[in-house]
Length: 258
Image (cartoon, rainbow, N blue to C red; front, side, top):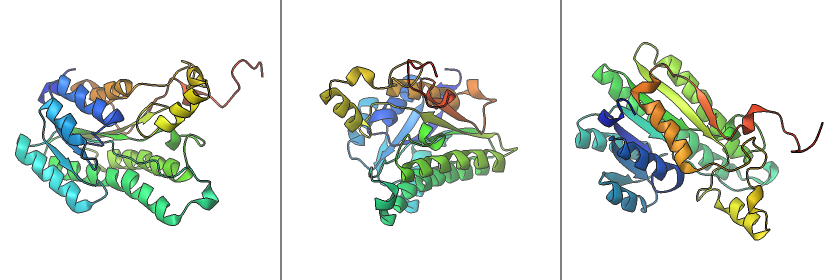
């Protein structure tokens, strides 16, 4: 992908699922990537790719600043960042959700994304050059009923953050975009897929979108790579759904004539 082989990037949530797919895709395209995750399993992905890593919590301001400092030291600078780390939280109903859980989901999903966007913006402004930031939101941030309330609220916040940051950074050449995955099998969503398979309905997962299937982590990683590359130089402030077309329509029952 044009220009990606010169990019130096910090990417969070890189231990598994979409984050690991993003790291693999970027390195395959020639980019240098600092892998970040609170899960020590990130060490295995980093070893596989021959890239540096740090283990820590993206909602910790001190850790995030240290991670960016370490990446700058390792690579001699940075050109972009991927704020992908996120948690689902519990699946309780709204009235049964503890406030502490609500806060934790927002701290990681929205707070951690803010810290990543701020850190790369500070570095690129100081260098006086542009760059690219990609944040992982969700279709749950676009419409209701794709996740628990606190998760949906956090991802809607990520979309608003991306739009606001793109405008706040006007004139700097720093682009900020979001990807909004639909249903993709990862560690976070495996319980849904496992339940469907146990019920003999594994082939029905993803049936509500026009493609009639769930997505793959690599399909999300492909868009992230594009948004970080020079080929997306005129794409800014966008929240792009990668959901098989799910969010393109109002809910309906497949096969119904109404």
